[in-house]
Length: 363
View 1 (tube, one colour):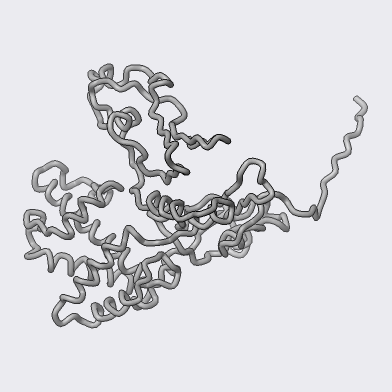
View 2 (cartoon, rainbow, N blue to C red; view 1 turned 180 degrees about the vertical axis):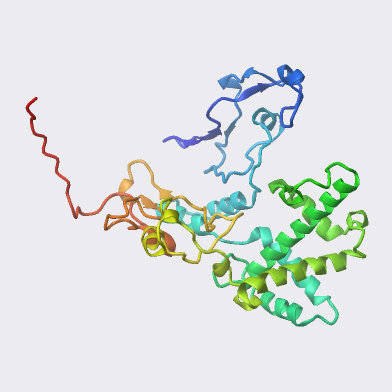
């Protein structure tokens, strides 16, 4: 919960119940015999973590970790988002000279690829140092030359860098699984495709492995990190060529297409389902940036309003606000969401009226 009052005081805290944690760690599976030593009832409201920053003009959050130390132990260590999105929001807030609805909506559209910036430089340097690259790697280098540093619909370089990072994570995950099989931590009959050992907080460790090349991490059949990373890059290139034919056509918009389907559409013929579903428009944005947009999830609304200034308020919703497939306003407002236009919060001039005339009914 983020709050601000008329005097300019701001604060952050949590709502809902928090457990009073005992000495036994409760962030992992424990024996039921030790359960009484983990949670000791509920934390008193006065003991909740509170963040007050009177020396700042703003607070911000983007599903990232807000606090640390003893307060973090009170709430637990969950799958927080990495701080890239929150950091970008903070940078935009710092640059604001005036704060109003039009200024506050701008950070919502920020699609700077700060999380992939180091991966781009790593991949660019790697390709530059390769002797006698084949045609596919030459094409990859040419595509990388078009890097914009943003998740833009026309940026094929963003798609290539993101896919390479995905292959890097996949290869590291497979190496960990192979080590677990060697040490009989998992059994061969286990469905290995369902094992994923990395999480949102693994990025720092992955960057260290990528840049420091520790020999003891190499799989037994790989002679060097250079050959391993080359295999990762070729896997990324093959993946994109299979979907797009060539790397230049692997535009981020082609990868990131909207799939906003009505829940009834799957049971209907295609010509009827198309009337219920939103168009599969190309989407800019991605994870780890304020413009969080994906085929099946993303910004559920863009909502900026201040008490007493409702006439300047903005509310843009994907899919529109009607929800009734037979209504002429079924997807009204959705185009604004796609085109980054600002839909006013307050209603405009009435077009239709629904009048209810109650009548007495004889028993």
